[in-house]
Amino acid sequence: MTTPVLSFEGIRKSYGQTQALRGVSFHVNGGEIFGLLGPNGAGKTTTIKMLITLLIPTAGTARVLGIDVVKNAHEVRKRIGYVFGGDRGVYERLSGYDNLRYFAELYGVPPAEQKRRIEELLELVGLRGREHERAEGYSRGMKQRLHVARGLLHDPEVIFLDEPTIGLDLLAKQRFRDLLVRLNNEQGTTIFLTTQYLEEADVLADRVGIIDHGHIVAEGTPAALKAEVGRPTVEAIPASEDDLPRTAGILERFGEPVSSTKGVAVRLNDGRVGLYEIVRALDADGLEAENIQIHQPSLDDVFLAKTGRSLEGAAEEDEEEQRRGLAMEPA
Image (cartoon, rainbow, N blue to C red):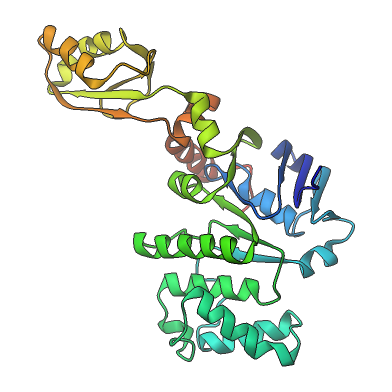
């Protein structure tokens, strides 16, 4: 049996009376992209900080490359890279090249290898030709790619990314995701990624863990988790708000009600039922729909099935907790 590259066994973390993690366990295999998905305050950053040795568990054992992160923190740090979201960690008045040269010194990259390694990474992250410009003139996407290059200078076996695309525009997000796939495919780097973006986890990750209120509520490949939910959802928005109760009555003939922000939605009892049958049923009752569509299962459906709420709603609740000073995860 292959030893996992990352293992989290029965991890608990408390801050006074507040429990950030409540017996979390999972593993990551070599060469995988593993996504830890959840709303703000769910425990994602607490988890990643333990794996990179910045926090000590209250209970349980965490290992990276088979090394205990508490007993041998220094050895772990030598073999991992870390990238976080936002603009922190870039020296704005230095060029991209000089940023990398500075961090190469900090990481102990031998002087004879620095130039070659920096040139390779500039090519990998797509900053070739812009490396001698000051970083203050870089876009947020370029700064984030510079973060990745910095995290790879010492050729780590595992790289950790904490909300790496937060604040990036759509094009920059896509370019960054392409970079991660290329890094994983071409160099075989194991990637541990935290995110609250459903599509990011779905597209990038070989496997995901979904965390909520300090618990892992689901773990597996995105396809397998969606298959557990199994059934598509149909959502209808009636032309008149007064028709919501009657529309709900019609749709409930076909499945069980689920939450909808604008209209009525049900998870179909029979996956073979299509929009045609539902439209006919609405029409037979004299009901007109402004919009009706079918949704295939998503990771948000998985979250809903496991927690009874949508991930979007969970994020709003946790932001409210943070405003009240009750969030489980420290800033």
